[in-house]
Length: 219
Image 1 (cartoon, rainbow, N blue to C red):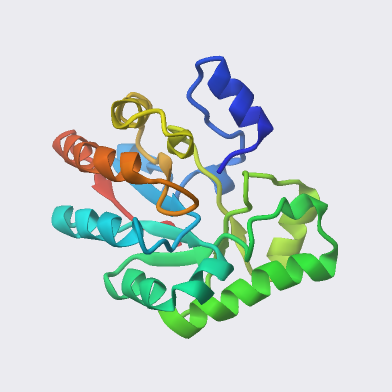
Image 2 (cartoon, rainbow, N blue to C red):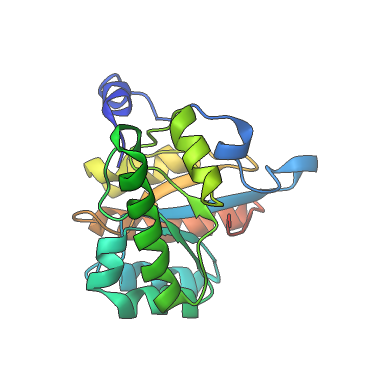
Protein backbone atom coordinates (compact mmCIF):
# COMPACT_ATOMS: atom_id res chain seq x y z
CA UNK A 1 0.00 0.00 0.00
CA UNK A 2 1.17 3.53 -0.65
CA UNK A 3 0.93 6.78 1.20
CA UNK A 4 -0.66 10.18 0.60
CA UNK A 5 1.99 11.42 -1.82
CA UNK A 6 1.51 8.37 -4.01
CA UNK A 7 -2.26 8.75 -3.91
CA UNK A 8 -1.92 12.37 -5.03
CA UNK A 9 0.37 11.35 -7.87
CA UNK A 10 -2.06 8.66 -8.96
CA UNK A 11 -4.90 11.18 -9.00
CA UNK A 12 -2.79 13.31 -11.31
CA UNK A 13 -2.41 10.35 -13.68
CA UNK A 14 1.17 9.49 -12.78
CA UNK A 15 2.68 6.06 -12.38
CA UNK A 16 4.27 6.16 -8.96
CA UNK A 17 7.99 5.59 -8.56
CA UNK A 18 8.85 6.12 -4.92
CA UNK A 19 11.94 8.29 -4.44
CA UNK A 20 14.72 6.32 -2.84
CA UNK A 21 18.44 5.95 -2.98
CA UNK A 22 19.93 3.20 -5.11
CA UNK A 23 20.41 0.76 -2.25
CA UNK A 24 16.74 0.96 -1.38
CA UNK A 25 15.10 1.05 -4.78
CA UNK A 26 17.24 -1.25 -6.90
CA UNK A 27 18.00 -4.90 -6.63
CA UNK A 28 21.41 -6.30 -5.67
CA UNK A 29 22.70 -6.05 -9.24
CA UNK A 30 20.62 -3.00 -10.13
CA UNK A 31 20.66 -4.19 -13.73
CA UNK A 32 24.36 -3.30 -13.98
CA UNK A 33 26.13 -3.89 -17.23
CA UNK A 34 22.84 -3.88 -19.10
CA UNK A 35 21.65 -7.13 -17.52
CA UNK A 36 17.92 -7.46 -18.09
CA UNK A 37 16.94 -8.44 -14.57
CA UNK A 38 13.76 -7.39 -12.78
CA UNK A 39 12.63 -7.97 -9.21
CA UNK A 40 8.99 -8.88 -8.69
CA UNK A 41 7.68 -8.19 -5.18
CA UNK A 42 4.37 -8.75 -3.42
CA UNK A 43 3.19 -6.96 -0.26
CA UNK A 44 0.67 -7.41 2.56
CA UNK A 45 0.19 -11.20 2.44
CA UNK A 46 -0.13 -13.96 2.93
CA UNK A 47 -3.79 -14.10 1.91
CA UNK A 48 -5.74 -17.37 1.65
CA UNK A 49 -7.78 -15.91 -1.20
CA UNK A 50 -4.97 -14.67 -3.45
CA UNK A 51 -1.52 -15.90 -2.38
CA UNK A 52 -2.15 -19.47 -3.66
CA UNK A 53 -3.40 -18.11 -7.01
CA UNK A 54 -0.33 -15.94 -7.40
CA UNK A 55 1.98 -18.77 -6.38
CA UNK A 56 0.38 -21.00 -9.00
CA UNK A 57 0.94 -18.39 -11.72
CA UNK A 58 4.55 -17.82 -10.69
CA UNK A 59 5.17 -21.57 -10.72
CA UNK A 60 3.62 -21.89 -14.19
CA UNK A 61 6.10 -19.33 -15.57
CA UNK A 62 9.08 -20.49 -13.53
CA UNK A 63 9.43 -17.11 -11.81
CA UNK A 64 10.76 -16.45 -8.31
CA UNK A 65 9.59 -13.39 -6.39
CA UNK A 66 10.06 -11.65 -3.06
CA UNK A 67 7.10 -11.58 -0.67
CA UNK A 68 7.07 -8.84 1.98
CA UNK A 69 4.69 -10.30 4.53
CA UNK A 70 2.86 -8.87 7.53
CA UNK A 71 3.51 -10.69 10.77
CA UNK A 72 -0.15 -10.73 11.74
CA UNK A 73 -1.00 -12.46 8.46
CA UNK A 74 1.82 -14.96 8.89
CA UNK A 75 0.43 -15.78 12.33
CA UNK A 76 -3.08 -16.16 10.90
CA UNK A 77 -2.03 -18.24 7.87
CA UNK A 78 1.28 -19.90 8.74
CA UNK A 79 0.95 -22.71 6.19
CA UNK A 80 0.86 -20.12 3.39
CA UNK A 81 4.15 -18.60 4.47
CA UNK A 82 5.63 -22.08 4.53
CA UNK A 83 4.29 -22.66 1.01
CA UNK A 84 5.80 -19.41 -0.30
CA UNK A 85 9.22 -20.44 1.03
CA UNK A 86 8.85 -24.07 -0.08
CA UNK A 87 8.22 -22.96 -3.66
CA UNK A 88 11.54 -21.09 -3.71
CA UNK A 89 10.42 -17.51 -3.12
CA UNK A 90 12.00 -15.08 -0.68
CA UNK A 91 9.94 -14.17 2.41
CA UNK A 92 10.83 -10.80 3.92
CA UNK A 93 9.62 -8.39 6.60
CA UNK A 94 6.82 -5.84 6.04
CA UNK A 95 6.16 -5.16 9.76
CA UNK A 96 3.56 -6.82 11.97
CA UNK A 97 0.47 -4.68 11.39
CA UNK A 98 1.34 -2.13 8.65
CA UNK A 99 1.95 1.04 10.72
CA UNK A 100 3.89 4.09 9.63
CA UNK A 101 7.25 3.14 11.16
CA UNK A 102 8.35 6.78 11.31
CA UNK A 103 5.76 7.43 14.01
CA UNK A 104 6.74 4.61 16.38
CA UNK A 105 8.87 4.60 19.48
CA UNK A 106 12.05 2.58 19.36
CA UNK A 107 10.52 -0.25 21.37
CA UNK A 108 7.41 -0.36 19.19
CA UNK A 109 9.55 -0.36 16.06
CA UNK A 110 11.60 -3.25 17.38
CA UNK A 111 8.45 -5.19 18.26
CA UNK A 112 6.93 -4.66 14.81
CA UNK A 113 10.06 -5.95 13.13
CA UNK A 114 11.19 -8.52 15.68
CA UNK A 115 7.82 -10.22 16.12
CA UNK A 116 7.49 -10.50 12.34
CA UNK A 117 11.01 -11.94 12.07
CA UNK A 118 10.12 -14.65 14.57
CA UNK A 119 6.84 -15.53 12.86
CA UNK A 120 8.55 -15.81 9.47
CA UNK A 121 11.49 -17.77 10.83
CA UNK A 122 9.14 -20.32 12.40
CA UNK A 123 7.51 -21.04 9.03
CA UNK A 124 10.05 -20.14 6.36
CA UNK A 125 13.12 -21.38 8.22
CA UNK A 126 15.13 -18.18 7.92
CA UNK A 127 15.30 -14.71 9.43
CA UNK A 128 14.46 -11.92 6.95
CA UNK A 129 17.35 -9.67 5.97
CA UNK A 130 15.22 -7.01 4.29
CA UNK A 131 12.53 -4.67 5.58
CA UNK A 132 9.99 -2.87 3.42
CA UNK A 133 8.44 -0.09 5.52
CA UNK A 134 4.67 0.19 5.01
CA UNK A 135 3.64 3.01 2.65
CA UNK A 136 7.30 3.42 1.69
CA UNK A 137 7.51 5.70 4.74
CA UNK A 138 11.23 6.09 5.40
CA UNK A 139 13.39 8.64 7.17
CA UNK A 140 16.77 8.63 8.85
CA UNK A 141 15.40 7.15 12.06
CA UNK A 142 13.75 4.25 10.22
CA UNK A 143 16.98 3.57 8.33
CA UNK A 144 19.14 3.61 11.44
CA UNK A 145 16.74 1.44 13.46
CA UNK A 146 16.49 -1.02 10.59
CA UNK A 147 20.27 -1.18 10.28
CA UNK A 148 20.59 -1.81 14.02
CA UNK A 149 18.37 -4.87 13.54
CA UNK A 150 20.46 -6.07 10.60
CA UNK A 151 17.91 -5.08 7.98
CA UNK A 152 18.35 -3.54 4.54
CA UNK A 153 15.51 -1.16 3.68
CA UNK A 154 13.99 -2.09 0.30
CA UNK A 155 11.43 0.03 -1.55
CA UNK A 156 10.45 -0.13 -5.24
CA UNK A 157 10.78 1.69 -8.55
CA UNK A 158 7.63 0.62 -10.45
CA UNK A 159 4.24 0.95 -8.73
CA UNK A 160 1.14 0.25 -10.86
CA UNK A 161 -1.09 1.06 -7.87
CA UNK A 162 -2.75 -2.35 -8.09
CA UNK A 163 -4.01 -1.76 -4.53
CA UNK A 164 -6.47 0.80 -5.98
CA UNK A 165 -7.98 -1.80 -8.34
CA UNK A 166 -7.68 0.24 -11.55
CA UNK A 167 -8.36 -2.84 -13.71
CA UNK A 168 -6.11 -5.65 -14.91
CA UNK A 169 -5.36 -3.85 -18.17
CA UNK A 170 -4.17 -0.73 -16.34
CA UNK A 171 -1.98 -2.79 -14.00
CA UNK A 172 -0.41 -4.56 -16.96
CA UNK A 173 0.29 -1.39 -18.93
CA UNK A 174 1.63 0.54 -15.94
CA UNK A 175 4.15 -2.23 -15.29
CA UNK A 176 5.13 -3.00 -18.87
CA UNK A 177 5.45 0.66 -19.90
CA UNK A 178 7.78 1.49 -17.02
CA UNK A 179 10.01 -1.54 -16.47
CA UNK A 180 13.73 -1.09 -17.03
CA UNK A 181 16.68 -3.35 -16.19
CA UNK A 182 16.97 -3.45 -12.41
CA UNK A 183 13.36 -2.40 -11.78
CA UNK A 184 11.70 -3.43 -8.53
CA UNK A 185 8.00 -3.99 -9.25
CA UNK A 186 5.50 -3.50 -6.44
CA UNK A 187 2.38 -5.69 -6.46
CA UNK A 188 0.12 -7.04 -3.71
CA UNK A 189 -1.09 -10.51 -2.77
CA UNK A 190 -2.87 -9.35 0.39
CA UNK A 191 -4.64 -6.42 1.97
CA UNK A 192 -7.84 -6.61 -0.08
CA UNK A 193 -9.28 -7.86 -3.33
CA UNK A 194 -6.27 -8.78 -5.48
CA UNK A 195 -8.16 -10.50 -8.29
CA UNK A 196 -7.06 -7.82 -10.77
CA UNK A 197 -3.43 -8.34 -9.82
CA UNK A 198 -3.77 -12.08 -10.36
CA UNK A 199 -5.48 -11.46 -13.71
CA UNK A 200 -2.74 -9.08 -14.87
CA UNK A 201 0.18 -11.24 -13.78
CA UNK A 202 0.35 -13.85 -16.59
CA UNK A 203 0.65 -11.21 -19.32
CA UNK A 204 3.21 -9.25 -17.30
CA UNK A 205 5.36 -12.34 -16.90
CA UNK A 206 5.03 -13.63 -20.45
CA UNK A 207 5.69 -10.20 -21.97
CA UNK A 208 8.77 -9.50 -19.86
CA UNK A 209 10.14 -12.94 -20.65
CA UNK A 210 9.56 -12.32 -24.34
CA UNK A 211 11.51 -9.07 -23.98
CA UNK A 212 14.45 -11.03 -22.62
CA UNK A 213 14.08 -10.24 -18.93
CA UNK A 214 14.86 -12.70 -16.20
CA UNK A 215 13.53 -12.56 -12.67
CA UNK A 216 15.48 -12.63 -9.41
CA UNK A 217 14.71 -12.33 -5.72
CA UNK A 218 15.84 -9.25 -3.82
CA UNK A 219 17.01 -10.69 -0.51
